[in-house]
Length: 119
Image 1 (cartoon, rainbow, N blue to C red):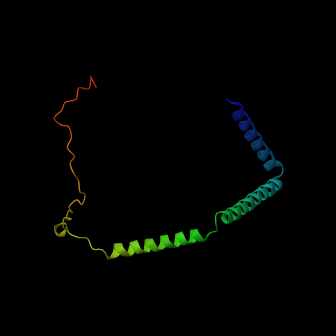
Image 2: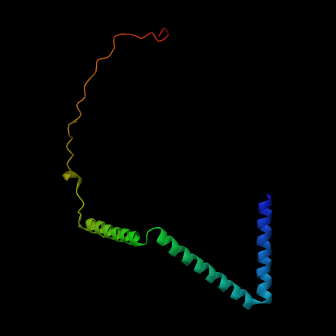
């Protein structure tokens, strides 16, 4: 095993041993430490989100996007309710449009054979 893996597993094992011994010796202190750790993590996450929101330009764009998405969903639902299934006999084939590209054939050297070995 690599050195990092050994160090990681030994730290995890020591932490587990410490948690188990603290659970049996001082369960109140363990609960207090877990609550303090949870509150600390919550405060750090809250501060991080506030800082990132200000840095990214606020939450107005997110609200506008969410509102537009809701309106789009409502519109799609109303379309699905009002449409009637069409029968295959009434379907019409779409008309083909003529190509509007003006293409011209350029005369080439079709009659001549190229001797590629000599050129």
